[in-house]
Image (tube, rainbow, N blue to C red; front, side, top):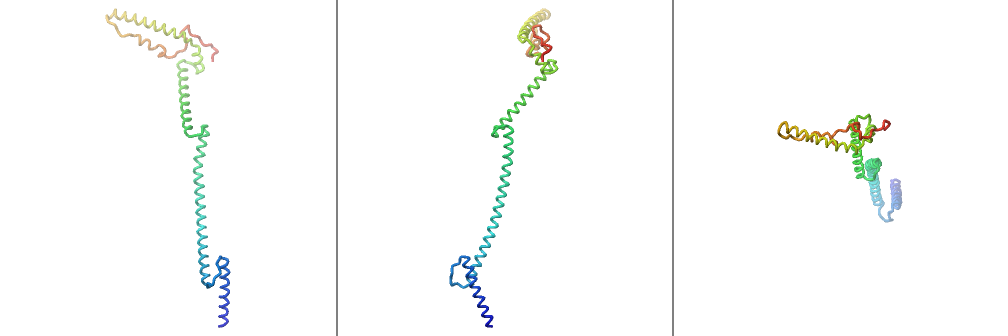
Length: 211
């Protein structure tokens, strides 16, 4: 029995020394407190430290999640920005309003090109030319001054003809009729269709080698 008591006392002494040593390592000031009290306090501090480590671990996990979300968000933002830069580079401008303006200019250019092509096709067809180059050559060979003189002469003759017809109708029917000059002059330039320049001696004939 005495041996057991001595052993228990030795264990308590060793326990007290170990508690004092651990307390010193943990920053506990030396005191006359019972080892059991110091042990309870150290145990509580250990549990708090473990809870703190766990909280820190969870916090680090949350921080990593936020960083991943931030990286994903920056990637989503960068994608439209890259597309915007590609569009700006394609149009050769620096801002989106300039892109809109340049697009409108390109659309207007396409409309004008389409109108020019349609006009060239119509002109070629009405002149009976093989292509627009030939049609342009025919137009370049026209004597515009001569055409103007012919137009005036034709209008004068139509006026004379109209007056003559009016007089004949008055003599036959005894009453005037509506003027026919407007119907006749409806075929004059610029309402008259374009024809090849072959009906006037005053026009310049295009050279056979014209392009």
